[in-house]
Amino acid sequence: MDVTVSGDLVHSAAVAEVITACVVDKVPARLTASDATLWGPDAESLAAIRLGWVDLPASSRALLPQLAELRERLAAEGLDHVVLAGMGGSSLAPEVITATYGKSLTVLDTTDPAQVRRALGEDLERTVVVVSSKSGGTVETDSHRRAFEQAFLDEGLTNDQLAGRIVVVTDPGSPLENTARNAGYTIVLADPNVGGRYSALTAFGLVPSALAGVDVERLLDEAAALAPTLAGDRDNPGLLLGAVLGAAANHGRDKLVLANSGDIVGFGDWAEQLIAESTGKQGRGILPVVVESPTAPGFDHASGPDAVRAVIGAEDIERLAADLRVSGPLGAQLLLWEYATAVAGRVLGIDPFDQPNVQESKDNTGALLERAGDDGPLPVGTPAFVDGAVEVHGDAGLLAGASDLTGALRALLAAVPDNGYLAVMAYLDRLGDTDAPELRPLLAEALDGEQVTFGWAPRFLHSTGQFHKGGPAVGAFLQITGANTEDLDVPAKPYSFGRLQLAQALGDLGAITSRERPVLRLHLTDRAAGLGQLLDAARALADGAAR
Image (cartoon, rainbow, N blue to C red):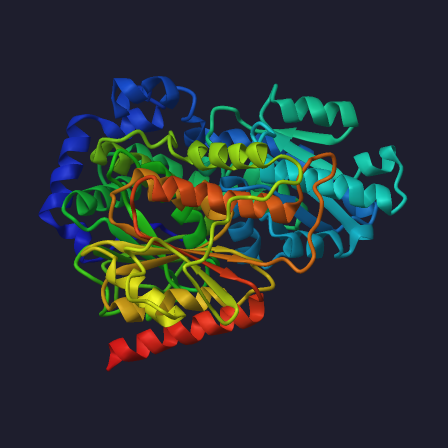
Protein backbone atom coordinates (compact mmCIF):
# COMPACT_ATOMS: atom_id res chain seq x y z
CA MET A 1 0.00 0.00 0.00
CA ASP A 2 1.01 3.62 -0.43
CA VAL A 3 2.57 5.76 2.27
CA THR A 4 0.44 8.77 3.12
CA VAL A 5 0.92 11.76 5.41
CA SER A 6 -2.29 13.66 6.07
CA GLY A 7 -4.01 15.94 8.57
CA ASP A 8 -4.69 19.62 9.05
CA LEU A 9 -1.05 20.47 9.74
CA VAL A 10 0.20 19.40 6.33
CA HIS A 11 -1.62 22.34 4.74
CA SER A 12 -0.24 25.05 7.00
CA ALA A 13 1.66 28.04 5.66
CA ALA A 14 4.61 27.24 7.92
CA VAL A 15 4.94 23.76 6.43
CA ALA A 16 4.68 25.12 2.89
CA GLU A 17 7.44 27.60 3.69
CA VAL A 18 9.73 24.85 4.97
CA ILE A 19 9.07 22.66 1.94
CA THR A 20 9.79 25.53 -0.44
CA ALA A 21 13.08 26.27 1.31
CA CYS A 22 14.06 22.58 1.21
CA VAL A 23 13.26 22.33 -2.50
CA VAL A 24 15.27 25.48 -3.26
CA ASP A 25 18.21 23.99 -1.35
CA LYS A 26 17.75 20.63 -3.15
CA VAL A 27 17.41 18.83 0.19
CA PRO A 28 15.59 15.71 -1.12
CA ALA A 29 18.15 14.97 -3.82
CA ARG A 30 21.07 15.79 -1.54
CA LEU A 31 19.77 13.67 1.33
CA THR A 32 19.21 10.60 -0.83
CA ALA A 33 22.72 11.15 -2.22
CA SER A 34 24.06 11.15 1.38
CA ASP A 35 25.25 14.75 1.29
CA ALA A 36 26.87 15.32 4.67
CA THR A 37 26.81 19.11 4.35
CA LEU A 38 23.04 19.39 4.88
CA TRP A 39 23.28 20.12 8.62
CA GLY A 40 26.08 22.66 8.57
CA PRO A 41 29.87 22.52 8.96
CA ASP A 42 29.84 21.50 12.62
CA ALA A 43 27.83 18.37 11.81
CA GLU A 44 29.55 17.45 8.58
CA SER A 45 32.26 15.14 9.90
CA LEU A 46 29.78 12.98 11.84
CA ALA A 47 27.12 13.04 9.13
CA ALA A 48 29.71 11.77 6.67
CA ILE A 49 29.84 8.46 8.57
CA ARG A 50 26.18 8.28 9.60
CA LEU A 51 24.20 8.36 6.34
CA GLY A 52 24.43 4.72 5.34
CA TRP A 53 20.79 4.23 6.34
CA VAL A 54 19.68 6.00 3.16
CA ASP A 55 20.73 3.01 1.03
CA LEU A 56 19.69 0.18 3.35
CA PRO A 57 16.63 -1.00 1.38
CA ALA A 58 19.11 -2.13 -1.28
CA SER A 59 22.37 -2.69 0.61
CA SER A 60 20.89 -4.84 3.39
CA ARG A 61 19.76 -7.45 0.86
CA ALA A 62 23.32 -8.79 0.93
CA LEU A 63 22.49 -10.12 4.42
CA LEU A 64 19.58 -12.29 3.30
CA PRO A 65 21.53 -15.44 2.26
CA GLN A 66 23.54 -15.41 5.51
CA LEU A 67 20.36 -14.97 7.56
CA ALA A 68 18.58 -17.79 5.75
CA GLU A 69 21.53 -20.13 6.29
CA LEU A 70 21.83 -19.18 9.95
CA ARG A 71 18.14 -19.65 10.63
CA GLU A 72 18.20 -23.07 8.92
CA ARG A 73 21.17 -24.17 11.02
CA LEU A 74 19.59 -23.05 14.29
CA ALA A 75 16.28 -24.71 13.43
CA ALA A 76 18.07 -27.98 12.71
CA GLU A 77 19.64 -27.78 16.17
CA GLY A 78 16.28 -27.11 17.83
CA LEU A 79 17.20 -23.55 18.82
CA ASP A 80 13.97 -21.64 18.32
CA HIS A 81 13.81 -19.42 21.42
CA VAL A 82 15.49 -16.15 20.48
CA VAL A 83 16.76 -13.72 23.13
CA LEU A 84 18.03 -10.32 22.06
CA ALA A 85 20.54 -8.54 24.29
CA GLY A 86 20.75 -4.94 23.09
CA MET A 87 19.92 -1.37 24.01
CA GLY A 88 18.28 1.58 22.27
CA GLY A 89 17.99 1.22 18.52
CA SER A 90 19.56 -2.24 18.72
CA SER A 91 16.57 -3.58 20.65
CA LEU A 92 13.61 -1.30 19.92
CA ALA A 93 13.43 -1.89 16.16
CA PRO A 94 13.46 -5.71 16.41
CA GLU A 95 10.87 -5.49 19.20
CA VAL A 96 8.50 -3.53 16.93
CA ILE A 97 9.21 -5.71 13.89
CA THR A 98 8.60 -9.03 15.64
CA ALA A 99 5.54 -7.79 17.53
CA THR A 100 3.98 -6.44 14.33
CA TYR A 101 4.63 -9.72 12.52
CA GLY A 102 3.36 -11.76 15.46
CA LYS A 103 6.67 -13.49 16.18
CA SER A 104 8.16 -14.26 19.59
CA LEU A 105 11.32 -12.46 20.68
CA THR A 106 12.60 -11.99 24.23
CA VAL A 107 14.14 -8.53 24.40
CA LEU A 108 16.61 -8.02 27.22
CA ASP A 109 17.35 -4.32 27.60
CA THR A 110 17.36 -3.97 31.37
CA THR A 111 19.59 -4.27 34.40
CA ASP A 112 16.74 -5.30 36.69
CA PRO A 113 17.92 -8.57 38.26
CA ALA A 114 14.47 -10.15 38.34
CA GLN A 115 13.91 -9.50 34.65
CA VAL A 116 17.38 -10.76 33.72
CA ARG A 117 16.95 -13.86 35.90
CA ARG A 118 13.62 -14.58 34.21
CA ALA A 119 15.23 -14.44 30.76
CA LEU A 120 18.01 -16.76 31.89
CA GLY A 121 15.48 -19.30 33.13
CA GLU A 122 13.21 -19.49 30.08
CA ASP A 123 13.76 -22.49 27.78
CA LEU A 124 17.53 -22.30 28.05
CA GLU A 125 17.90 -25.62 26.23
CA ARG A 126 16.25 -24.07 23.15
CA THR A 127 17.80 -20.60 23.43
CA VAL A 128 19.99 -18.70 21.02
CA VAL A 129 21.18 -15.27 22.18
CA VAL A 130 21.70 -12.38 19.78
CA VAL A 131 24.17 -9.92 21.31
CA SER A 132 23.80 -6.58 19.52
CA SER A 133 26.15 -3.66 20.07
CA LYS A 134 28.08 -1.42 17.71
CA SER A 135 31.16 -1.54 19.89
CA GLY A 136 30.39 -4.00 22.65
CA GLY A 137 31.10 -1.36 25.25
CA THR A 138 27.45 -0.91 26.26
CA VAL A 139 27.50 -1.99 29.90
CA GLU A 140 24.02 -3.51 29.89
CA THR A 141 24.63 -5.67 26.81
CA ASP A 142 28.07 -6.73 27.97
CA SER A 143 26.52 -7.81 31.29
CA HIS A 144 23.79 -9.78 29.50
CA ARG A 145 26.36 -11.60 27.38
CA ARG A 146 28.36 -12.56 30.44
CA ALA A 147 25.24 -13.77 32.25
CA PHE A 148 24.15 -16.02 29.39
CA GLU A 149 27.65 -17.40 28.88
CA GLN A 150 27.73 -18.40 32.54
CA ALA A 151 24.20 -19.84 32.38
CA PHE A 152 25.08 -22.02 29.40
CA LEU A 153 28.23 -23.26 31.12
CA ASP A 154 26.25 -23.98 34.30
CA GLU A 155 23.92 -26.13 32.20
CA GLY A 156 26.89 -28.26 31.21
CA LEU A 157 27.55 -26.94 27.72
CA THR A 158 31.11 -27.10 26.47
CA ASN A 159 32.77 -23.98 25.10
CA ASP A 160 32.19 -25.27 21.57
CA GLN A 161 28.50 -25.88 22.27
CA LEU A 162 28.21 -22.44 23.89
CA ALA A 163 29.72 -20.87 20.75
CA GLY A 164 26.80 -22.22 18.73
CA ARG A 165 24.30 -20.49 21.02
CA ILE A 166 25.48 -16.90 20.61
CA VAL A 167 25.17 -14.70 17.55
CA VAL A 168 26.95 -11.35 17.65
CA VAL A 169 25.84 -8.33 15.63
CA THR A 170 28.40 -5.55 15.67
CA ASP A 171 30.44 -3.14 13.57
CA PRO A 172 33.50 -4.33 11.66
CA GLY A 173 36.66 -4.05 13.73
CA SER A 174 34.86 -3.41 17.02
CA PRO A 175 36.16 -4.80 20.31
CA LEU A 176 33.05 -6.99 20.40
CA GLU A 177 33.97 -8.51 17.03
CA ASN A 178 37.37 -9.44 18.40
CA THR A 179 35.81 -10.97 21.53
CA ALA A 180 33.33 -12.94 19.41
CA ARG A 181 36.01 -14.25 17.03
CA ASN A 182 38.16 -15.43 19.90
CA ALA A 183 35.15 -17.27 21.36
CA GLY A 184 34.08 -18.77 18.03
CA TYR A 185 30.67 -17.07 17.99
CA THR A 186 28.69 -16.49 14.81
CA ILE A 187 29.21 -12.89 13.71
CA VAL A 188 27.03 -10.75 11.48
CA LEU A 189 28.61 -7.42 10.65
CA ALA A 190 26.47 -4.31 10.40
CA ASP A 191 26.98 -1.22 8.26
CA PRO A 192 29.39 0.93 10.31
CA ASN A 193 28.08 4.09 8.65
CA VAL A 194 24.72 3.91 10.40
CA GLY A 195 24.06 5.14 13.93
CA GLY A 196 22.18 2.97 16.37
CA ARG A 197 18.85 4.78 16.23
CA TYR A 198 18.81 4.69 12.40
CA SER A 199 19.74 1.00 12.30
CA ALA A 200 16.31 -0.63 11.98
CA LEU A 201 17.02 -1.95 8.47
CA THR A 202 20.62 -2.96 9.19
CA ALA A 203 21.79 -6.24 10.68
CA PHE A 204 20.79 -4.87 14.10
CA GLY A 205 17.14 -4.90 13.11
CA LEU A 206 17.14 -7.79 10.67
CA VAL A 207 19.17 -10.52 12.41
CA PRO A 208 17.02 -11.04 15.54
CA SER A 209 13.85 -10.46 13.52
CA ALA A 210 14.80 -13.06 10.92
CA LEU A 211 15.82 -15.61 13.54
CA ALA A 212 12.46 -15.08 15.23
CA GLY A 213 10.71 -15.94 11.96
CA VAL A 214 10.00 -12.58 10.31
CA ASP A 215 10.13 -12.32 6.53
CA VAL A 216 12.70 -9.53 6.55
CA GLU A 217 12.93 -9.48 2.76
CA ARG A 218 9.34 -8.23 2.74
CA LEU A 219 10.37 -5.51 5.18
CA LEU A 220 13.12 -4.39 2.78
CA ASP A 221 10.70 -4.56 -0.14
CA GLU A 222 8.34 -2.20 1.66
CA ALA A 223 11.14 0.27 2.30
CA ALA A 224 12.46 -0.07 -1.26
CA ALA A 225 9.03 0.80 -2.67
CA LEU A 226 9.16 4.10 -0.78
CA ALA A 227 12.79 4.97 -1.47
CA PRO A 228 12.42 6.51 -4.97
CA THR A 229 9.83 9.03 -3.77
CA LEU A 230 12.23 10.37 -1.14
CA ALA A 231 14.49 11.87 -3.82
CA GLY A 232 11.73 13.96 -5.35
CA ASP A 233 10.60 17.51 -4.71
CA ARG A 234 6.91 16.67 -5.23
CA ASP A 235 4.75 14.02 -3.58
CA ASN A 236 7.55 13.23 -1.14
CA PRO A 237 6.00 11.95 2.11
CA GLY A 238 9.32 12.04 3.96
CA LEU A 239 9.89 15.70 3.12
CA LEU A 240 6.31 16.49 4.09
CA LEU A 241 6.54 14.68 7.43
CA GLY A 242 9.90 16.24 8.25
CA ALA A 243 8.58 19.69 7.36
CA VAL A 244 5.54 19.20 9.61
CA LEU A 245 7.67 18.09 12.56
CA GLY A 246 10.24 20.84 12.15
CA ALA A 247 7.81 23.67 11.40
CA ALA A 248 5.51 22.71 14.28
CA ALA A 249 8.41 22.62 16.74
CA ASN A 250 9.72 25.97 15.54
CA HIS A 251 6.27 27.44 16.17
CA GLY A 252 5.93 26.13 19.74
CA ARG A 253 4.33 22.74 19.07
CA ASP A 254 7.34 20.75 20.20
CA LYS A 255 5.55 17.75 21.80
CA LEU A 256 4.74 14.95 19.36
CA VAL A 257 2.05 12.74 20.88
CA LEU A 258 2.24 9.33 19.21
CA ALA A 259 -0.55 6.76 19.13
CA ASN A 260 -0.51 3.44 17.28
CA SER A 261 -3.63 2.42 15.44
CA GLY A 262 -3.04 -1.23 16.34
CA ASP A 263 -1.82 -2.81 13.12
CA ILE A 264 1.77 -1.69 13.71
CA VAL A 265 2.59 -2.75 17.26
CA GLY A 266 4.73 -0.60 19.51
CA PHE A 267 5.93 1.75 16.78
CA GLY A 268 5.83 4.74 19.09
CA ASP A 269 8.53 3.26 21.33
CA TRP A 270 10.93 3.02 18.38
CA ALA A 271 10.01 6.44 16.99
CA GLU A 272 10.44 7.91 20.48
CA GLN A 273 14.13 7.04 20.67
CA LEU A 274 14.75 8.08 17.06
CA ILE A 275 13.18 11.53 17.44
CA ALA A 276 14.12 12.37 21.03
CA GLU A 277 17.77 11.39 20.73
CA SER A 278 18.14 12.97 17.29
CA THR A 279 16.55 16.34 18.06
CA GLY A 280 16.81 16.89 21.84
CA LYS A 281 19.95 18.97 22.18
CA GLN A 282 21.21 22.55 22.39
CA GLY A 283 18.12 23.48 24.40
CA ARG A 284 15.67 22.61 21.65
CA GLY A 285 14.04 19.53 20.18
CA ILE A 286 10.88 17.51 19.68
CA LEU A 287 9.64 15.49 22.64
CA PRO A 288 7.80 12.30 21.61
CA VAL A 289 5.03 11.32 24.01
CA VAL A 290 3.93 7.73 23.47
CA VAL A 291 0.34 7.20 24.57
CA GLU A 292 -1.78 4.10 24.93
CA SER A 293 -4.37 4.86 22.25
CA PRO A 294 -5.86 7.74 20.24
CA THR A 295 -8.29 8.34 23.11
CA ALA A 296 -5.71 8.36 25.92
CA PRO A 297 -5.06 11.37 28.17
CA GLY A 298 -2.53 13.56 26.41
CA PHE A 299 -3.90 12.67 22.96
CA ASP A 300 -7.56 13.58 23.31
CA HIS A 301 -9.03 17.03 23.99
CA ALA A 302 -6.74 17.49 26.99
CA SER A 303 -3.73 17.83 24.70
CA GLY A 304 -2.25 21.29 25.09
CA PRO A 305 -1.43 23.93 22.45
CA ASP A 306 2.21 22.81 22.43
CA ALA A 307 1.35 19.31 21.12
CA VAL A 308 0.95 17.65 17.74
CA ARG A 309 -1.27 14.60 17.89
CA ALA A 310 -0.05 11.93 15.45
CA VAL A 311 -1.51 8.50 14.77
CA ILE A 312 0.53 5.83 13.01
CA GLY A 313 -0.71 2.70 11.28
CA ALA A 314 -0.63 0.53 8.21
CA GLU A 315 -4.22 1.19 7.13
CA ASP A 316 -7.62 2.64 8.01
CA ILE A 317 -6.47 5.58 10.13
CA GLU A 318 -8.11 8.42 8.21
CA ARG A 319 -11.19 8.02 10.42
CA LEU A 320 -9.21 8.82 13.56
CA ALA A 321 -9.15 12.36 14.95
CA ALA A 322 -5.57 13.66 14.88
CA ASP A 323 -3.45 16.58 13.75
CA LEU A 324 -1.27 14.22 11.74
CA ARG A 325 -1.83 10.75 10.29
CA VAL A 326 0.96 8.63 8.87
CA SER A 327 -0.01 5.39 7.19
CA GLY A 328 1.98 2.77 5.37
CA PRO A 329 3.52 -0.68 5.89
CA LEU A 330 6.12 -1.15 8.60
CA GLY A 331 9.23 -1.33 6.41
CA ALA A 332 8.29 1.92 4.69
CA GLN A 333 7.41 3.60 7.99
CA LEU A 334 10.85 2.83 9.41
CA LEU A 335 12.63 4.50 6.48
CA LEU A 336 10.09 7.31 6.33
CA TRP A 337 10.55 8.41 9.93
CA GLU A 338 14.35 8.21 9.69
CA TYR A 339 14.26 10.48 6.65
CA ALA A 340 11.74 12.84 8.25
CA THR A 341 13.80 13.08 11.43
CA ALA A 342 16.88 14.01 9.43
CA VAL A 343 14.87 16.72 7.64
CA ALA A 344 13.44 17.99 10.93
CA GLY A 345 16.98 18.24 12.30
CA ARG A 346 17.91 20.56 9.46
CA VAL A 347 14.79 22.65 10.06
CA LEU A 348 15.61 22.91 13.77
CA GLY A 349 19.25 23.72 13.09
CA ILE A 350 20.70 20.77 15.00
CA ASP A 351 22.84 17.73 14.18
CA PRO A 352 20.46 14.74 14.09
CA PHE A 353 23.27 12.19 14.35
CA ASP A 354 25.04 13.03 17.61
CA GLN A 355 23.92 12.42 21.22
CA PRO A 356 26.16 14.66 23.32
CA ASN A 357 24.39 14.13 26.64
CA VAL A 358 23.88 10.36 26.63
CA GLN A 359 27.43 9.70 27.77
CA GLU A 360 27.01 11.90 30.85
CA SER A 361 24.78 9.47 32.73
CA LYS A 362 27.02 6.56 31.69
CA ASP A 363 30.04 8.37 33.08
CA ASN A 364 28.18 9.18 36.30
CA THR A 365 27.27 5.50 36.71
CA GLY A 366 30.86 4.38 36.25
CA ALA A 367 32.15 7.01 38.67
CA LEU A 368 29.65 5.98 41.36
CA LEU A 369 30.61 2.33 41.09
CA GLU A 370 34.31 3.16 41.14
CA ARG A 371 34.05 5.45 44.18
CA ALA A 372 31.99 2.91 46.12
CA GLY A 373 34.37 0.07 45.32
CA ASP A 374 33.36 -3.57 45.38
CA ASP A 375 31.34 -3.49 48.60
CA GLY A 376 30.88 0.15 49.61
CA PRO A 377 27.42 1.69 49.81
CA LEU A 378 26.08 3.76 46.95
CA PRO A 379 25.03 7.33 47.87
CA VAL A 380 21.29 6.76 48.10
CA GLY A 381 20.77 9.64 50.52
CA THR A 382 18.30 9.97 53.35
CA PRO A 383 14.61 10.12 52.46
CA ALA A 384 12.70 13.28 53.29
CA PHE A 385 10.06 10.98 54.75
CA VAL A 386 8.65 7.47 54.42
CA ASP A 387 5.03 6.69 53.58
CA GLY A 388 4.25 3.01 53.94
CA ALA A 389 6.39 1.07 51.45
CA VAL A 390 7.67 4.24 49.72
CA GLU A 391 10.73 6.27 50.63
CA VAL A 392 10.33 9.83 49.32
CA HIS A 393 13.50 11.63 48.23
CA GLY A 394 13.57 15.25 47.03
CA ASP A 395 14.95 18.63 47.94
CA ALA A 396 13.34 20.66 50.70
CA GLY A 397 12.09 23.33 48.34
CA LEU A 398 10.16 20.86 46.21
CA LEU A 399 8.69 18.98 49.15
CA ALA A 400 7.88 21.97 51.35
CA GLY A 401 4.58 21.20 53.09
CA ALA A 402 4.37 17.61 51.77
CA SER A 403 4.04 14.90 54.40
CA ASP A 404 2.74 11.93 52.44
CA LEU A 405 3.08 10.36 49.01
CA THR A 406 0.07 12.14 47.53
CA GLY A 407 1.41 15.47 48.74
CA ALA A 408 4.82 14.74 47.22
CA LEU A 409 3.28 13.92 43.85
CA ARG A 410 1.10 17.01 44.03
CA ALA A 411 4.20 19.13 44.66
CA LEU A 412 5.99 17.62 41.67
CA LEU A 413 3.02 18.22 39.38
CA ALA A 414 2.89 21.82 40.53
CA ALA A 415 6.54 22.17 39.49
CA VAL A 416 5.85 21.26 35.84
CA PRO A 417 6.16 24.57 33.94
CA ASP A 418 3.64 25.81 31.40
CA ASN A 419 4.18 23.99 28.09
CA GLY A 420 6.48 21.63 29.96
CA TYR A 421 6.35 17.92 30.61
CA LEU A 422 6.65 15.31 33.33
CA ALA A 423 8.90 12.30 32.71
CA VAL A 424 8.22 9.12 34.67
CA MET A 425 11.39 6.98 34.78
CA ALA A 426 10.85 3.47 36.15
CA TYR A 427 13.90 1.47 37.24
CA LEU A 428 11.75 -1.60 37.65
CA ASP A 429 10.96 -4.97 36.08
CA ARG A 430 9.18 -4.38 32.77
CA LEU A 431 7.63 -7.87 32.83
CA GLY A 432 7.06 -8.13 36.58
CA ASP A 433 5.98 -4.62 37.60
CA THR A 434 3.47 -4.41 34.79
CA ASP A 435 1.14 -1.92 36.49
CA ALA A 436 3.74 0.85 36.46
CA PRO A 437 2.80 2.26 33.00
CA GLU A 438 -0.67 3.08 34.37
CA LEU A 439 1.00 6.06 36.02
CA ARG A 440 1.35 7.88 32.70
CA PRO A 441 -2.36 8.37 31.88
CA LEU A 442 -3.26 8.98 35.52
CA LEU A 443 -0.69 11.73 35.93
CA ALA A 444 -1.61 13.17 32.54
CA GLU A 445 -5.20 13.48 33.75
CA ALA A 446 -3.99 15.09 36.95
CA LEU A 447 -1.95 17.63 34.99
CA ASP A 448 -4.87 18.33 32.63
CA GLY A 449 -2.91 19.68 29.69
CA GLU A 450 0.81 19.17 30.19
CA GLN A 451 2.36 16.09 28.65
CA VAL A 452 3.57 13.03 30.57
CA THR A 453 6.05 10.46 29.26
CA PHE A 454 6.79 7.03 30.69
CA GLY A 455 10.11 5.27 30.27
CA TRP A 456 11.43 1.93 31.47
CA ALA A 457 14.96 2.24 32.74
CA PRO A 458 17.67 1.93 31.71
CA ARG A 459 16.35 1.68 28.14
CA PHE A 460 15.14 5.30 28.16
CA LEU A 461 18.69 6.46 28.91
CA HIS A 462 19.49 5.51 25.31
CA SER A 463 16.56 7.50 23.92
CA THR A 464 14.63 10.21 25.76
CA GLY A 465 17.51 10.46 28.23
CA GLN A 466 19.27 12.65 25.67
CA PHE A 467 16.26 14.97 25.47
CA HIS A 468 15.96 15.18 29.26
CA LYS A 469 19.42 16.69 29.53
CA GLY A 470 19.93 18.36 26.15
CA GLY A 471 16.42 19.48 25.20
CA PRO A 472 14.38 22.46 26.41
CA ALA A 473 14.66 22.98 30.18
CA VAL A 474 10.94 22.50 30.80
CA GLY A 475 10.87 19.03 32.30
CA ALA A 476 10.03 17.70 35.75
CA PHE A 477 11.06 14.19 36.66
CA LEU A 478 9.68 11.28 38.67
CA GLN A 479 12.26 8.55 39.23
CA ILE A 480 11.06 5.24 40.66
CA THR A 481 13.46 2.66 42.05
CA GLY A 482 12.65 -0.56 43.86
CA ALA A 483 14.20 -2.97 46.33
CA ASN A 484 15.45 -6.24 44.87
CA THR A 485 14.46 -9.30 46.86
CA GLU A 486 17.07 -11.40 45.04
CA ASP A 487 20.07 -9.95 43.24
CA LEU A 488 22.15 -11.47 40.45
CA ASP A 489 25.90 -11.16 40.00
CA VAL A 490 27.39 -9.99 36.72
CA PRO A 491 30.01 -12.68 35.99
CA ALA A 492 33.63 -11.48 36.17
CA LYS A 493 32.55 -8.01 37.26
CA PRO A 494 32.74 -6.48 40.76
CA TYR A 495 29.05 -5.56 40.78
CA SER A 496 25.66 -7.21 40.55
CA PHE A 497 22.79 -6.32 38.25
CA GLY A 498 20.93 -4.73 41.16
CA ARG A 499 23.93 -2.62 42.10
CA LEU A 500 24.41 -1.55 38.49
CA GLN A 501 20.71 -0.69 38.20
CA LEU A 502 20.84 1.52 41.29
CA ALA A 503 24.06 3.20 40.15
CA GLN A 504 22.41 3.97 36.81
CA ALA A 505 19.46 5.54 38.59
CA LEU A 506 21.65 7.64 40.86
CA GLY A 507 23.93 8.59 37.98
CA ASP A 508 21.06 9.91 35.90
CA LEU A 509 19.57 11.58 38.96
CA GLY A 510 22.81 13.48 39.35
CA ALA A 511 22.73 14.57 35.72
CA ILE A 512 19.22 15.96 36.16
CA THR A 513 19.72 17.62 39.54
CA SER A 514 22.92 19.28 38.31
CA ARG A 515 20.66 21.18 35.91
CA GLU A 516 18.44 22.26 38.81
CA ARG A 517 15.35 20.66 37.37
CA PRO A 518 12.56 19.43 39.68
CA VAL A 519 12.95 15.74 40.43
CA LEU A 520 11.33 13.37 42.89
CA ARG A 521 12.79 9.93 43.61
CA LEU A 522 10.50 7.32 45.07
CA HIS A 523 12.11 4.14 46.32
CA LEU A 524 9.75 1.19 46.77
CA THR A 525 10.93 -0.86 49.73
CA ASP A 526 8.30 -3.43 48.77
CA ARG A 527 7.65 -3.26 45.05
CA ALA A 528 4.10 -4.57 44.91
CA ALA A 529 2.89 -2.63 47.94
CA GLY A 530 4.76 0.54 47.01
CA LEU A 531 3.55 0.50 43.42
CA GLY A 532 0.00 0.01 44.66
CA GLN A 533 0.35 3.03 46.93
CA LEU A 534 1.79 5.10 44.11
CA LEU A 535 -1.06 4.23 41.75
CA ASP A 536 -3.62 5.02 44.46
CA ALA A 537 -2.02 8.43 44.99
CA ALA A 538 -1.99 9.11 41.24
CA ARG A 539 -5.66 8.11 40.98
CA ALA A 540 -6.56 10.46 43.79
CA LEU A 541 -4.87 13.35 42.00
CA ALA A 542 -6.50 12.42 38.68
CA ASP A 543 -9.94 12.21 40.32
CA GLY A 544 -9.38 15.57 41.97
CA ALA A 545 -8.46 17.17 38.63
CA ALA A 546 -11.55 15.66 37.00
CA ARG A 547 -13.78 17.28 39.61
